[in-house]
Length: 182
Image (cartoon, rainbow, N blue to C red; front, side):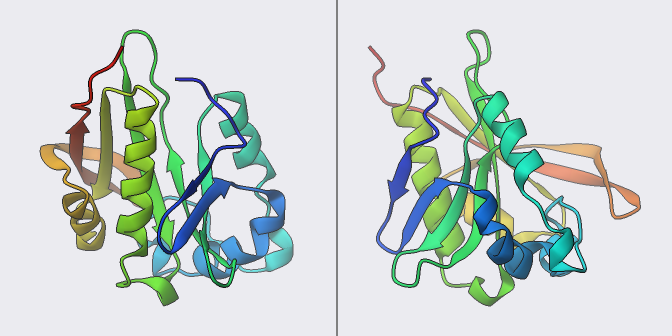
């Protein structure tokens, strides 16, 4: 997989492009200041926008050649969320995990499924063999996104993540790339 931070993915309603520090306001409004969104999306709650920064996350993803896409509406150019490559494939494990978060005002409109399907398609076209995604048990909306994208249930990992003051079980879904690779 050849990493290119200038990659842009387009869907019917969305643009997925690499996150920029200038997206901090929209990410603050849609994700980091909303405890409902952060109930399951593992990130830091930020009370004041002046405390919001994306630079460390952007730098980490760039240094590890992982995609961190802003999910932007085609018509308004508002960044409503993010989708990221949580892990990078290598020569032995050609698997990549994805994660996503969309602002509450944009829930139940199909944006997350649309972004996830585009990300999976992109990773498969880049030669990734298997894409996985996990959700903290109880986050049925994320489970539905994975199922809408054709992902299949793989397993439940007991007490996988310590978040919000407790250990949480995580259920994982996967999809195998059935495209012929040269």
